[in-house]
Amino acid sequence: MNQLVICLIICALTIISYAWGKLKMGTTAILSMVAFVITGCIDPATAVGNFANTNAVMMLSMFVVAAGFNRTRFVKNCASSVNKIARGSLTMVMFGYILITVILSQFIQSSMVVFGIMAPMLAASCEELKIKPSKVMFPLMIVCISTISVLPLGSGATQFAELNGYLEANAYTDYMVALTDPMKARLPMLILIAVYAIFFASRLAPDNPVVDTIAVKAKEDKKEALKPFQERAGYIIFILVTLGLIFQKLIGVEIWVICLAGAVAMVVTGVLSEQEAVESIPWWMGFLFVGSLTMGGALTETGAGEAVGNVLANVIGGLGNPYLIGIVFFIVPFALTQVMMNRSVITIFVPIAILACKSMGANPVGVMILVQSACLSSFMTPMATPAVPMCMAAGGYDLKSLFKQSIVPAILLCIVSVGWIMTVFPL
Image (tube, rainbow, N blue to C red; front, side, top):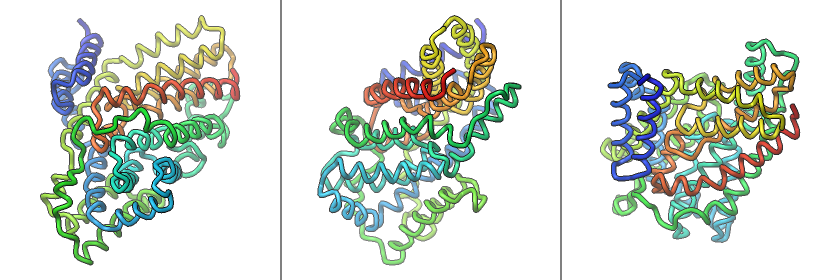
């Protein structure tokens, strides 16, 4: 039995365990990591190195920053102001938060960070309205993921250059991607997801958390109010972290450093005690993320992604309909990105899309953006992107409730993305 088959078997067993729910997801993730190492699917040093992954540090640090922000009256006052403007309407509350999320997602190239900024305020608004976080965290998360870098602002302004780099690397420069092409292709998707999140997503969400959430309100209510210095420090640190993330490229500091510095500042200034900071971190989610990184690394090292890509290249040769070709180039990367890092999937499938179009003498721009869109829209499993396990912890979702909420937006994304992109950018 070769490494590829072994890797796929371990992946399948891991996903079955997540769905089965008898073991904690963090436990399953660590067991799968051990299995990948023992069977030689991934190097032990690489697996252990995932514990120091910058995304993991960034994710856990944002929980501490958010916990410190939640200790202040500022977040509750902001939530109350939003609720007054919305007049108690959940739809209007979601409209306000989703609009801000879409704007932030154009400047901060991390869905996890955007979610970490917006989730505390949305949770506070819903708490005042007596609405459970399980009704709102998934809609917020899919907007954070699916609308990132759509507009040619911030990181979105570099998308065309990256795609043109792939064209040059594969010696197919008959066609080039314009600055506004990614926006033109993905804008309908942004509008679709925003509308769905505001008006429809909460209807499919569970009325109550399926598992415990990261917020333990009973304990928080017993805590004394912060002193004036700590109160001001709490929201000043949160605002500075947010501004630092928005202007990260200008100040030249890594995102994970900004998040970690904010977490440390919350403790140093006394907004949170050391114990409160440690308790604010859902460690099971950290283990889940590390296990997910290991699975993605194993799939990459054993060549699973390339094997799927080669099969895909052979299949599309027999498809004459451009929309069928578009469906294949969306669904396959979208599915793979649920268990692999999106950057790895993009690296594999964009060149395949270019070479396939080159062999047909076709325009590859639409297909390239379609692959990119599919890879940047992964939200169906906790292995897809760090924002998903953050959402599961904040909303109290298990894998079944997450998957149930994901089906409809995934289908809508596929239909709208393929229909629009393959029409606007015909082969």
